[in-house]
Length: 448
Image (cartoon, rainbow, N blue to C red; front, top):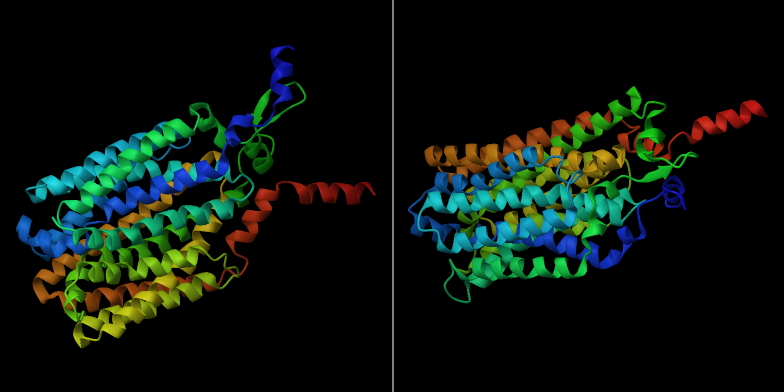
């Protein structure tokens, strides 16, 4: 058989691409979640770290933001990594860097050392985020919304479990070492499992782009042709739909991660005094309650055009309750606010992220996810740094209330801005994914 005929005989990605899909989905999710768990172990330990490192509330936000800012830099640097490099290589490298960085946190004697290790964690997660999302897209071919929801579940689930495990493991002794050493070992163990189970050839970057064959036996990128006409570029209307969907997902992500950034940095200091018992596990659970509520929403395939405005409204109500809790001393406000805000964030971001994922062609999927998370994670850095700066001057309770009021106002304005577009990006996205079927139907009617 000649080479052209051989290419024509296998127009789609090789069969090895779908080898062991369930195991590979599970390993990909475990990789992303474990890296995020390791990065968020510190949350219930910050009061202890204040003593060991000699820092205040602003120092805590610096320690937290060093991870976020390095992740932002990594998302920009590695933006197209998932679309060009072998996915297995990227994930294994991220696990290796993450393991070393997490071990470094256990040994950090100064804030600078701690921030350097956190920065390395951020780079590892930046490399893994777009790559894992691209892997889900390939392994769950034809189900882009499921792939997007699984990316969010692994991300929010890992972030939520980090504080809980950090608090629980710290109770076993050596509280500033045991959690980090345990997770470093886990990350180090996952890497060889991936190498043993997942074939290198099954994770090629080009497999993320569906291929089809033309009558002359040449392979081409089908997504571009189906979406864009003769020259393989998206139409102006489709490009506008993609950009609107991505911008809205990034904006909602910024707001929601401003909430998460507070929960993962200064919330333990703000809410610890409200607990009836002194327990780092309870502090971690309280800080993670918002993220656990958000992760739970990702398990439910909620549908409807009103998910974003409803979710953003719930987020606004929830964060206002959280802002009032330190001033009133009411633990029930923390619990109710955390759950309400988490559910709202989960609804709004699930909808916006799913629309954005469905709107872009597979060739730009990894880069798009990285772009969304670049803006999203910026919400964990800039507002939290401002909150830490304000807390050092007016006190933490007043600063938290002002922070909550601003985030709630932004959430309400964003919700109102989305009410005008009832034919959302999702409908146009699905139309774009279906390709030129309407044009074919018009052609049939005209011929009849």
